[in-house]
Length: 559
Ligand code: FAD
Image 1: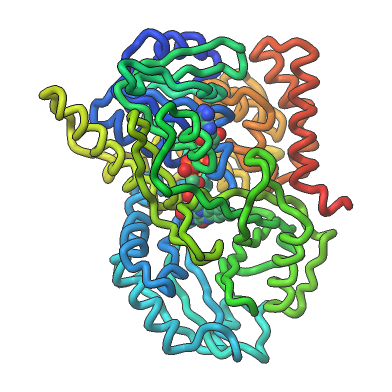
Image 2: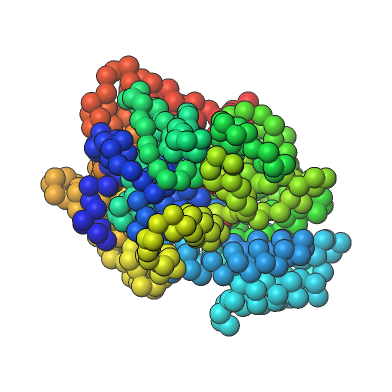
């Protein structure tokens, strides 16, 4: 932990009642609604500047869009086509900053953009586009784009269609785990004194002299009502931003509203689509698709279609999956993916700002802040990659408003150099060395291949705590003792309260190792039941919810 002084703010499921007390009895500078990456980023920026900060999330942390993205920290190459130079420059530069602050979690990933005969991209245009991308994002010389011949491209990715290939672009991006990034941001914020709580749903705004003065929440676990007083309420509710804006007394009068678009991903076993590296390829309708290797799988995405359904019920439909299968099969002729190859899927909603007459893919990914007359500050749009800048914007606004009324001084933003929990690692080389040490520690035990890489990219240096815990109990290190130790760690430090939290948001096993979810569901639910003193009924409910999530991720394969 960076700051033992604030260990009482730790995201421990066992500390919910003491955190509730803090939420109720203190007066905060700001309370943030939404524990996705936007809210988590704001909590960290605000707490690091000395603002009294609270954050509440109605479900699990990152259960909204922030666990359902393409999981890239990227500049958004395609936005160059829309002449969004400012956006590309801002998020492009952010990539290196976020990487430095969590090099185990935000990992450099070279991207191959194949160029094909009759495709949407020519050699010259792509070369210039990638060059501009590098310049805007201030990419280091050694990482700048390289243009490849057809042969060089095929060497990098032999699965491509050699008859069509005319060359390729090879450029720098970063990959991450969106939900883990969100949770580590929250843990770092908590270490700096932010009070953060999941399963705590805002259902009403409280008022003082016609101004919003706090929120009233329901604890979705204990059923208790919690009232939180704050000078400012920040609505960072992602796809739910308008739902909350509709709850204020002074209905929002501006014309700005959200435009939700759905994006899905499919996961297939590596053997069925064994790409050697990450690819970004164009398809016949002009859109671009990613194929990214991860552990034992390759995942493919995404789609971009208007969404008008229930916000909590978004899922991959047959038509979405078919679109991605066709995208792969038309670019990689020998692969012949089919529905039966799909191991898992996920779907998310982009909370974009509506622009009249623009289609889903054309709408800008810029973020915007809007304020209601009674003081609700809402932020929407943007990208995972730009969370830090969005956070700075909100904190700056809040500090400006506080200063208008009183002469308080706050520290300047520190997040550019603030290492996230899981580290600190000085560099990617240190991460590699640490992974080798963990590999060494695991050797000779009955564990699946790649476990050290999984543990370090998931928990960073916290891996040692998890392994120490097994050893302290004089237990042998194996798949069972390790998963139980991971579970205890996430309950004590990451507010895991259900099997879904653990398998989906903390470890992403539901997406990238779905067999292990079915294999370990009884074990994990049983241990949770013991740790959280559940009744038999609660345990049954936990398993039922997990099975429903497995069904949602896989039903297309079964049908
Ligand atoms: P969310 O993550 O949805 O968080 C909002 C939270 O508010 C939710 O968890 C919700 O439960 C909570 N909430 C709502 N109402 C209440 C209430 N009443 N009380 C308490 N809590 C409440 N960006 C990138 O940079 N890279 C990518 O590769 C990328 N890929 C993407 C792919 C797809 C398919 C999609 C959909 C988006 C992608 N994005 C990407 C964009 C990025 O994922 C989003 O911009 C980002 O996750 C939005 O985060 P958020 O915190 O604003 O929203």
